[in-house]
Image (cartoon, rainbow, N blue to C red):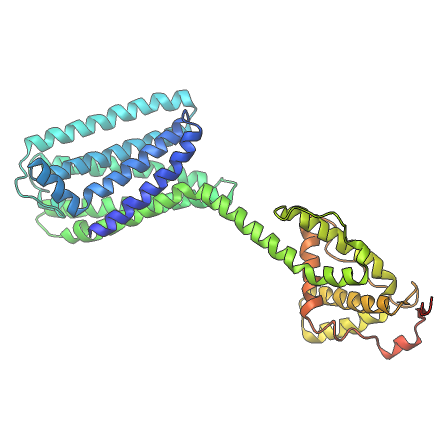
Length: 405
C-alpha cells in the first residue's frame, strides 16, 4: 500500500519542481506561489499517510498515532492552499490577499483545534491504516477526524466548481484539458472523503464498513493525486507537446513534397534557388519548396496534354477515390505527363481540348501545403501516374514538336 502513496507523492513533487521553474521566473506571482505550496504540501501529505511513514514517525516521536494528527494537519494545510490558489485565480490581487488572510486564519484555527482534540482524546493503540474507523467513536478523536474530512471536502468542492466553470470558457485546448484533469482529481478526492465519512458514520451507528476507509479511499486518493499533478502542468506541457506535434506534421509535409519537387526540378533545374537555407529553419524551407514547386508547375503547364486529365479522371473514378484524393491524382497524372512531354519537347497549345483546371487548394499557406502534399504523394505512389497516357483522341490533338530546335 505504501508504494502507491510514494508514487503519488513523487508525481506531485515532480509537478512542484516543474512549476517551481515558473515561479523562479516571476517570484512575486502570488498564484504561482500558492500553486507551488499546494503541490509541495500535497506531496508531503501522501508521503506522511503511507503506512511505513506512519510507523517511522510514531517510533521516532514515541507517541502512538502522532503520525495521524501530523498527516491530518497537512491535509488541512493543503485545503488552505487550495482556497488561497482559487482566490488568486478568481479575484484581483487586493481582494485575493484579503480573502487569503481569512482562509489562513480559518484553516489555521482548524489545525490548532485538531491538535487540542488529539491531546484531549485517548488513542493509545497504533493504527496505521484504519485510524479513522477504529477511533470513530472515541471522544475528541472523532471530532479531530470529522474536522479534517470536512475542511478538505470544502476546499475540494470549491476548486472543483471553479475549474469546471473555467474549463468551459478556456480558449486554449491544453488549458481546458488541464482544468478538466483537476476537476477529475477533485472528484476523486471528494469520493475518497465520502468513503471515509460513510465508514465513520457507519461506525457511529454500530455497523462496519471499514473497507471503504481502509481499502477504497486510499486508491481514490492516489489516483486523485496523480491526476491533479498532471492537470497542474498540462496547460504548459500540453501546449509544448502540441508545438512538437505541429513541427512533426510540418516536417512530414516537407518530406512529402519531395517526390513532386524532385520531378519538377529534374524537368526545370532553374527553379531551384542556389542560396542554401539553414537546416533548422523548417518554415523557411517549406516556403522555398512551395515556391519552387509553383515555379515548376508554371514551367511545365505548356506541356500539359488536356486529354490526360480525362483519362486520369476515368481511372480515378473507377478506383473509388474521395474527391480530394481524386483531384490530387488527376493533377499528379497531368504533371507527370507534362514532365515527360517537356523532356520530349512536346507542347500542347491552349484551346486544343479541355483545359485543365487550376491547382486546387487555394493560395492560403497550409491549404496549399496540404494540397501539394496530396499531389506529391499521388505523383509518387498512385498508379494514376502510370496510367497518365492520352486517349486515342490525343493522336488527333495538335502537338507542337521542338525536336531539332
